[in-house]
Image 1 (tube, rainbow, N blue to C red):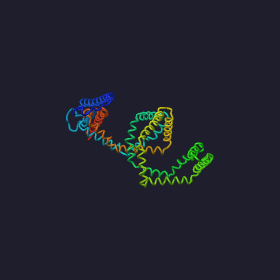
Image 2: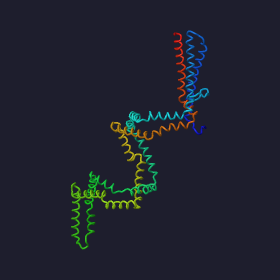
Image 3: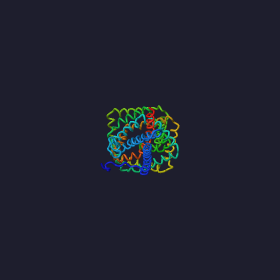
Image 4: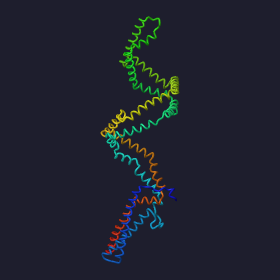
Length: 421
């Protein structure tokens, strides 16, 4: 099979060269110990007494060294090029190795209990709070976010926005009945009394306008007076109307239980009921909605509003000392300081982070671990064996060294038992 079908595993050439030198040194040491054991064995051959112990130890050292050399070599290639069964394991069974690695990672690193334990130990929210509490770090976040948002907003074209409104938003709004939504929302507003604030605001503004614009009020009323009415009578009537209008608005404004407020609440409640259950009201509401949404000026108005908002936003984002950035910086620092002192908030955020990690692993864990198998399967077997040997071969040479030393000690012990018994 050609290497073009199975890409070569690449790495840092400088690190590979360092590993290669280390592997050569350890191999030389292991071979040197084997050679030393062989020389000692030959020199002490047929000797007895103390040298007999030395000879037995040297013989066992050679056996241990050769056996461990065979075991280590068999992982990566056929020893001496001989096709001995169950050798060259990595080149021949790299697919099984990839699957085993995939299962190992999935079973030991991507379990929910393991993830939650590691997330708890990591204390991400505490670290985040300490980092954000430093003004330099918070400013860096604000600057980066402002730059990204500035680029993103700048790339939105008017024609793209118009197309999005016409092709995505408007058809959806037209197809979706508005009466049930409006009726339910109005019921909730009335139940919570949330409209009272708006009513108070309207009354305050109406009272302020009336008290500051008496002349305008009088002129508007006089325009509706009959032509034959005497001017003096008109003046008295319009003045009286003005006084009564101001007093009426003031009464409603200061009395939270005024009958006009009660009547308004009753009318709004009836409207909510009709929006939910009256077919005629629902039909009129849908026709009004469709007329508004189908009006050609709607897209033009939406685009104009967007352009005004975009210009203001871009100007604010571009100003490094502007209100938007200063406010964002203040909020980030405050959030970081709160994270540091609020243990309950940290626990919540760490819990959310753990839930997110568990969800991601549960949903995409198989795809993540499958990368291991897919990658290993694409490797060329011999080249993969050479690369793996570069990374772990130096440590594996200690097996040969230990086998030589331990084998020699075992040989001495066995020879001692032989002499004694």
